[in-house]
Image (cartoon, rainbow, N blue to C red):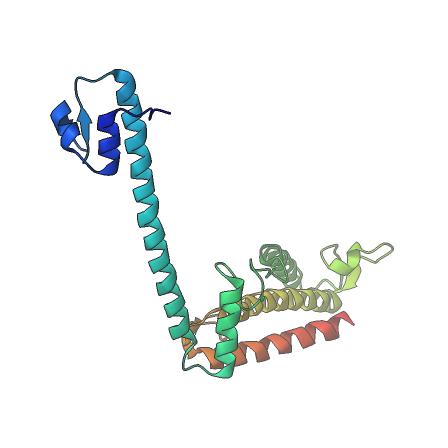
Length: 240
């Protein structure tokens, strides 16, 4: 069976360019390849296919070599990161590698599953309503009995909206304190989560003291965990 490729294409494909040069090759601008002139256009199409496949093979060969080098560098970096670490740090490093990109060490899942305890926006709006009602009652100290539907306990079926002045202020302040505690618990929980998730040696803590302070990461985690446990204990006591 005859080879369907013309002689000059077989020579070009095998790396022998003498016959191709004799046929008259010209350099294509912007490309490191030569094309024959004065040949059939069908042969030119066949030549383009051969040249394109050769370029594709060369590109894949270079890419495979680059990928192999990148993989080796990545493995070496992992080995360096896992060396000279304590047992806890080594466990966290292994967990982070297992979770992969976007994994959360605090949740031990990918992606992160943290959710806020309360809607801070709604709590803030509720605090504003309660504060306005408290100011309204305090501005009239001579009035002994008040009718108010602001307290949450008045929303229940069969509840009473008639309050003595001091009782109404106490109910409003109690609910306001509860809203503030829910906001604080949500903020502390989020900051504690972010601190556990961080692998930095020191972190900036804002919600713990109400102002920004830089702490060593282990100390920040311990302080935030203690504050979170206290707020959760109060919340459980009030809910029971």
